Length: 501
Image 1 (spheres, one colour):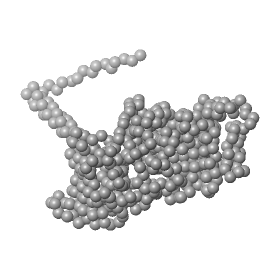
Image 2 (image 1 turned 135 degrees about the vertical axis):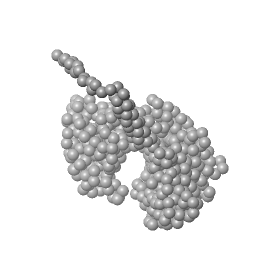
Image 3 (image 1 turned 120 degrees about the vertical axis):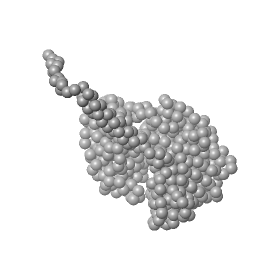
Image 4 (image 1 turned 90 degrees about the vertical axis):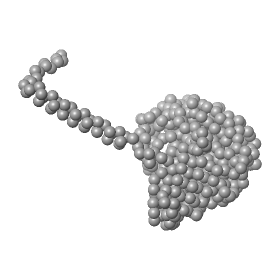
């Protein structure tokens, strides 16, 4: 039983009243003003200064068909600026920055000089910079990773147009007559865009841009077309909406930003080795570049393309993890994409097996001497990185094993939902976090260590029979087939993957 403490009598100091009152007033005043002063200090600490809240004001104009002009009023005096010089294997991006000038508060030339590729330094504090970026027709290896201007359109990516030192900005555009602009960002009443993450911001500019929109479970989706295509924007929106709905269900996570899907003709020919198209997902924007004249069977093609690219809106773009875990957000995405295309009826179970057989042939044609983690770290320096190919096959094996061990009660899809269940801390190490999720099912413990952390080679011929599949590599192409005599358990597993006998 809990008892209240007995009240203690307080002894009064019997001093004259005239002496006690001033002392109490002094103590009160001292405590009062001390508290007020502390509160003022607290407020000052909590309220950012106007300078800290003021974004850099940027104006982007297109004075000629192959260049843009940038003027930036800086949020604070600065003496150095750095532009991105490499991305996704594309080198020398910053070499396109020319005619760089810095202006001091007094309106003087701050004498900025180029110290290295994409690096500029000035002798005086500058409050304004101006420069030109040459955007001539890019190489096939460059799209869609860099900004470009061609014909009556252009793709503007702030990652290579704005110095990396600028973290927030307010931008307005001065476009050629007849041009309009589309982005996942929304302009304010004055036509300016508030950009909080320049490295992820993408704008499509040009003549005759067509846009249509949809909202799915609170997620706003725009589809923007530039150029002539064998489909209309409403038809593309229907395909994209279907894929978006699948991934909302897969992850159980609602995207917080408006999503923009941009489809435009490629500014340069793209070879057959890339299926005639290339795509990039950056921030909440997906860009597809292709040759409209060669984009046949467009409905199936769009579904396959966006089944891969749109998953990047979630993985890795919404995960907020650190480090190089490309084996997961590329390799596992490739497998999940063909499963999604199969579920949407674009390919069937046999075509899925044929695709995996072709992927295995590519895997066997290159050395596999690194772990997937090491391959991810060296992805852009190794022309034969196994990140995509081996990562996809490992995802296939993982899905087979977890289905088998759980009696098809669990699948790889469940691991995606767990990733987005808010139990994975933001800014955690990506490899550690994802491996922990993959290994969370008791029957899967050690799988990731073997195939992701270690350099264990894949031997599908030996592994697949346990799941009712065979691999025949005797011909020119490897063939994955369903075994003739399936056990009841194997039949149940393969039917969960879409097999119909």
